[in-house]
Amino acid sequence: MRRSNPLYIYIFSGLSVLGVIVGLYGALHSPLFMVRVVEVAEQPEDAPLDARTVSMLADVPLGEVSLVDLNLESIRRRLEAHTWIRGAVLTKRFPQTLSIQVIYRAPIGLLQSPKGKLQYVDSDGSLFGALDLRAKSDLPLLSGSRQDDAIRLLRSWSARKWRIANQVSQIVYDEEEGFQVWTTFKPSHRVRVILGQEIDAADFDEHLARIDSVFGQVVERSIPARQIYADSSKKIVVRTVRGS
Image (cartoon, rainbow, N blue to C red; front, side, top):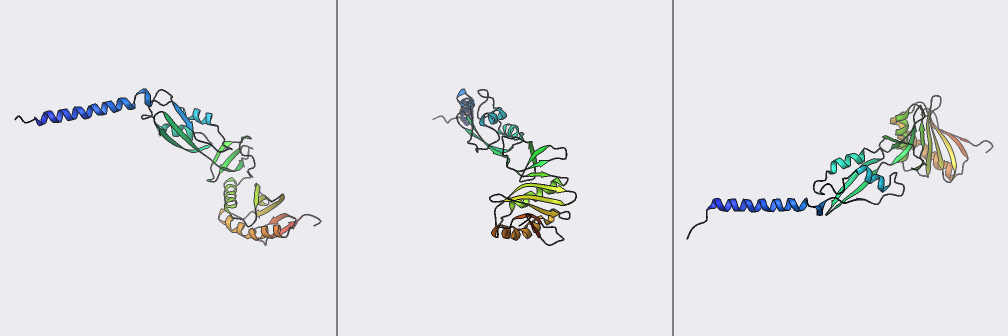
């Protein structure tokens, strides 16, 4: 009985494997797996971009490229080039769909430059975008020469778990009085908090902790406060509305 030549076996096996690979490659690159659909995941109600705009930014060549060969990194870079987009999650859904989930920047305030230009600032302290009245409009306004410190102060303020609810409407650095914060207690009690000239970024948390108890007293006792002086070198002084 003749024994099989091992060389022929190896050749035959190699050709079989090659045939499988070629067949699989051809199947995956057939029209069946061409990208036909770009699906934008459900977005928040206040999303700064609509699904159509997101699809345009992704710029996926529909009907021209296989889902297998689709370069997700280049699509992600195009999306993240937009000032409002922090990141994107891209998922290939066979046979013909690319799913996009957009992660937007979350503005915590509006920064006004010395020339009057308004930009959004997020929780990381990054500036982005120009003012858009269609986007979130109830953000605190930051102005004055110490812009970086104003951003840090807002971040410290926003991160605190206050005993009472309050919302910052404006932070200003004034050359005479230093940092001033306009805050509103529910429902509509507006107070100006003067932090002074000497305060620096390292003292923000300490200063805010000092005025926390004062805020509580103002609300609990219904004190008609108009101004709160919390300079680092002075006692905290509450000035009430005239005639009260």
